[in-house]
Length: 388
Image (cartoon, rainbow, N blue to C red):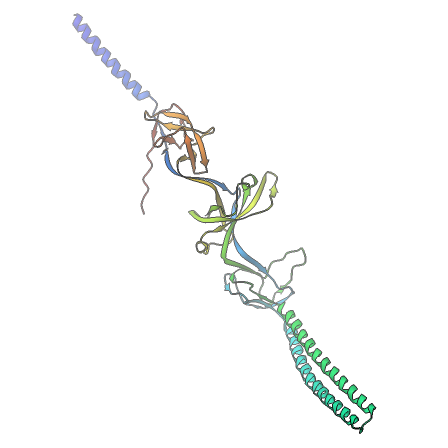
């Protein structure tokens, strides 16, 4: 009887233990799925980035317009055309100025003819004066005749000089006429591409009054040389030096970076808003050929590398919490809070100087619910990238 009761008690105990185990297993909290990254050596950079979007600019850009107002007679380019230095782009009606130039050319020919006439007469008068002096020496003519001959020779010589001066005056008049004509013609000051043309044949172009800008006749861009201009916070600007390496990213080319170099730091602080004082900086492309296909005006961002370290232990910056703390997924599957000594840092990686060892796994999905110290967690497998 006692053995039967003992056996039944053992069976009941086993059943209770099994039920308790099943209850614990069914009711225990599930491990939190987290994304983790291993602490590994690599390159870490300290960078400075722009506070607002910058833009791609051309090294040379000219908004061209004739200095004189007038009616467009010839429009020789359209937007998108490539032009060479000295190529005529726009010409205003200038028939009146061209006629004045032709008159000046004819006046020059007349002046040269008068030079020939006056100087020939001067040479003749000079020889006549010489003969008169010779005759006077022999007593054949009086002193008065010599004076008259010499005076006539000097007068003829003055007339010759005056005629030569009239030639120079006519040449200057031609130059002035050509300058007036040139003011009605717009030529390309450099090789480039026409970005915009304002006006059509027959329309009237008006030059800009002082202090009142108007639309240019032609907007010409030299797209062989491009750079990025962007604002940097005044606090970060103190770390920058000309020649520092940088990276350029464009909204139009997601995922692609262009190498660059800091070429200019503005010598003043721009205060467009009271809460945002910035310094404008310029970053040129390391390989100009890569930038030839870019369009002026593209939105662009820059990163200037102020310091870098290779082979440093690093973690993703997304794993860093305030106070230089991280959550470590230990071998028991528990999340453990760990304070680290951080070094160089940017938006992508942070250097670890102490507090973690190579191979440790830190949590990068801190925003997920239930991710906290002491929680049971499991590393979530990342989906394999599909090869094209």
